Length: 333
Image 1 (tube, rainbow, N blue to C red):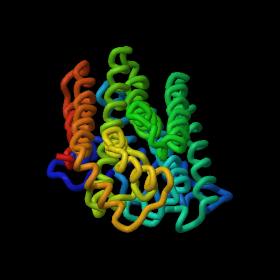
Image 2 (tube, helix red, strand yellow):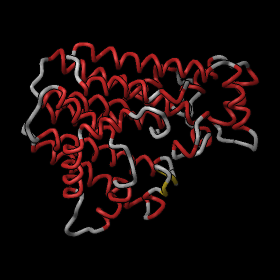
Image 3 (cartoon, rainbow, N blue to C red):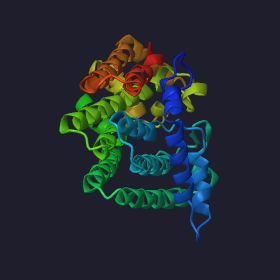
C-alpha cells in the first residue's frame, strides 16, 4: 500500500528523525546485497530495494530501539535484516502471483525471469540470517527466524484458502498475521529486545507491530476495490482478477443469497470471469456494506496498535508511531 497521498505523513517524520540511522541501514544493505560471483544478484535486488519504497519495516525497528534508549550498533543490522526479509518475500510473491507491476514499476520476474527472482530472494534470506547472527542475540535470531517461517506459512495457507468460498474471517486473519503482520511485529519486537527492555515493553512493541500490520493489510485489501491505482501502484481490482478472497469479499460471501454465491463461485473459485464482473462484484460489496465494515475493522486494528504503546513513556518517536497507526488507514475515510 502506498502511503503518499495524505496530508500528514508520519513516515516522513520518522525518516527525518531516523535519518542518520537509515543512512547507515542503506549503506549496509548496499554492502550486503553485493555478490562477487553473480552480478545479477545486486541488479535484481537494486531494482526492488531502490524502487522508492518507504522502508517502513526497518524504520519500525530503528524507532523501537531508539524509543527504548538503545545506543549500540546492532539496531542497524536488525533493520537491514528486516528489509532483506521483506524484499525476499516480495520477489517470491511476484512469482507466485504472476505479478507484472510492483511500486508502479515492472516486477523483477518480468524484467529478468522467475528463476532469477526466486534465487535472488533465497540469497537475500540467507543474507538476512547472516546479519541476525552478527548481533550475538539468540533471542533476536529466534524472533526473526520464527517470523520468516510464519511468513512462508501464511503464504502457503493463502494458496489453499484464497479461492475457497468456505474461507472465513478467522482464516483470513491467520493469513494476514502470517504474510504481513509477522514481519511488522518482529521488526518492532527486536527493537525492544536489543535495547534490553522489560518483558512488558517487548510485548507491547510486539502487539503494536502485530495490530499495525493487520490494519495495514486490511487497508491494502480494501483499497484494491476503491483505491487510486496511481497511489497504490497496482490496478483497482487486481485481487479480484487474481481470484484472491480478501476480507471485503469474505464478508460479502457470508451475506450472499444463492444467486450471489453462484457469482462468487464462478468468478473466484472457478476463475471464469467476464467483462463487467468487477463492476458487479463492487456493487455486491456496496450492497452488503462490506467495504464500510472492512474499513471499520482496519480502524479497530489501528486503535489496538495505538493502545499497545500506552505502556511506553511519552516521546516524539512514540507520538510518530501512534500517528502512523492512524495514517495507514487515513485514506479509507
